[in-house]
Structure formats: C-alpha cells, structure tokens
Length: 168
Image 1 (cartoon, helix red, strand yellow):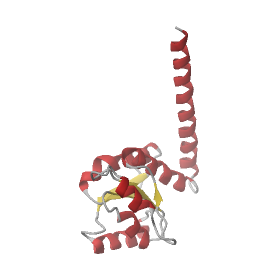
Image 2 (cartoon, rainbow, N blue to C red):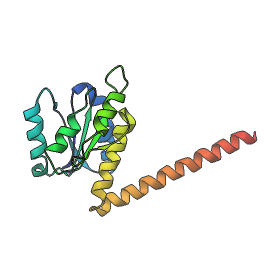
Image 3 (cartoon, helix red, strand yellow):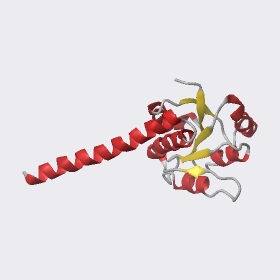
Image 4 (cartoon, helix red, strand yellow):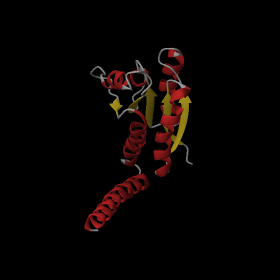
C-alpha cells in the first residue's frame, strides 16, 4: 500500500470493527491510510496535536468515528484545514442517533462531512475520501469511475435475475 493519504481515527478501540470498513474502501482504490485511536474528551491535547500534525505527515483527508457525544470529528476539524469526514457510531442505547446529531451539528466555519451511522457510513467515508483525492489523482478517479460502473452492472444483473424468476 502507498504512503498514507487518509487518516482513520476513532474515539475508542471498540469502534475498530466498524472503522475498518473505511480502510477496506480505501484499499479498493489503492489509497494508503493510517489508523489510530484518540479521544476528544479523554486525550484532548493528543487529539489536537494529531489534527495539527496530520498534513505534515502527508495526510489529505481525515475520517473520524465516534459514538455518544461524538465530538471527535469536530475537535479535529477545529485544529486542521484538512477535510474531515465524521462517522457516527452506534455506541449507546440511542443506536447512533446521538452520535449522528453531535457529528452533523457543527457551527458555521468548522465543517465536518457526516455520513451514515455505523458500517455503511464508514464504507461511504472511505469512498468520499477517495473522491476527494481523486480530484487531483487521475488513477484514483479512474478507479472511482469503474466503481460506479460496477455498481450499475450489479443492479442490472439483479434486475435480470428478478425478471427471470418472475417469469417462472
């Protein structure tokens, strides 16, 4: 894998299973990534330093997953000019709705692109990061085009299969 261009970070190692989905998506596009744990609340100085230093490490996009109060993506966005994608985690009895609202409700001037709760969101965060990188990387852009074509072919195949089963 190439040098990391995307940093995947989560508030707790219990989020790893979900956040690996972002890594899998990035791997599909040949994009290198790093993965780590830091907490907006339990390690605020570490989180601020992580965000401030990301660009100097060659990071171009940060994907941040957090549950509960879910301030991680916002705190990171406050300390960097890199694009930040927030992945709400289904960590509490509210099944991620609290995390979704905490991640998406950012004040004007500190944007966080927020995706769906849990694994679908992590997958989409990886794809969204690839789309951001693909703006300046022709090879990634080509892989994204192929990805869209594969999605369309999959729908077409499912349609044909369904129509064939209805005729029987």
